[in-house]
Length: 90
Image (cartoon, rainbow, N blue to C red; front, side):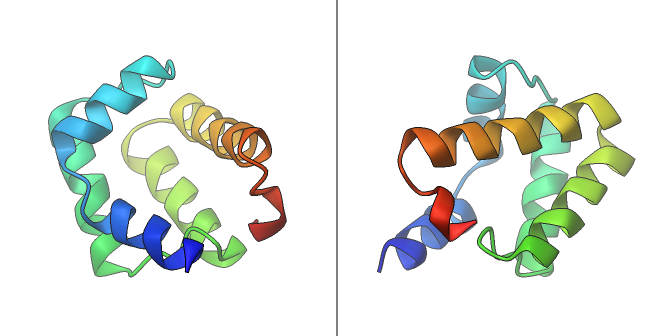
């Protein structure tokens, strides 16, 4: 159930929300980059709970947005998962 809610939230995110959250967590990206990232996530049906899919997403970020941003996104995901006691899903 929780996985379904998280995936639904991811797939229903807007570029503006992604930009807002990225800035608040120190990983600023442009609105067009956020839009492209969301298109990629939806097209590839990225499952944030799949290590293979997460790696695919981080490679996309690294290639299209930047290596530092991809590393920060990976660190952020792990930090938030631990903070909310969801690290066992990763």
